[in-house]
Amino acid sequence: MAELLSDSEVDQALAKLPEWRRDGDSIGRKAQLASFVQAIEVVDRVADLAEAADHHPDIDIRWRTLLFRLSTHSAGGLTEKDFQLAGQIEELLATAG
Image 1 (cartoon, rainbow, N blue to C red):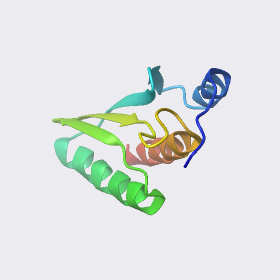
Image 2 (image 1 turned 90 degrees about the horizontal axis):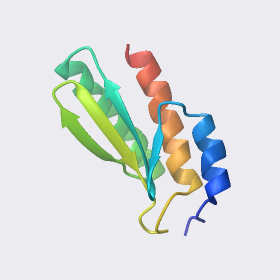
Image 3 (image 1 turned 30 degrees about the vertical axis):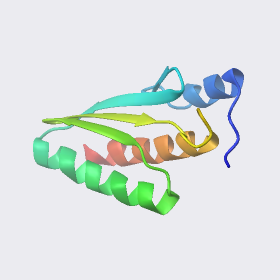
Image 4 (image 1 turned 135 degrees about the horizontal axis):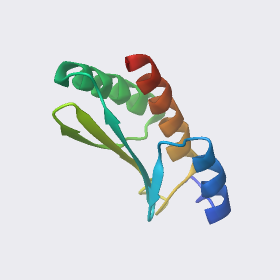
């Protein structure tokens, strides 16, 4: 099982991901894409990343706005797995336009 991060470790990790915010035992980020099709393409690519990591985010799709939420449910909070996937999502969004 993944080890929970301390509040200090979470703060340090979030400093590297300025678009992400902590909400209790999870982190989240909202992303606005240029079109609905582009948003769905991003979701498809995140799905591939999540499957490869065996770590799956909650994703809310609202037309061209996406809300990603990450938490390691099996550990009961935030772990390194959440921040690794968040970083990959950030890289993907940076290239999505």
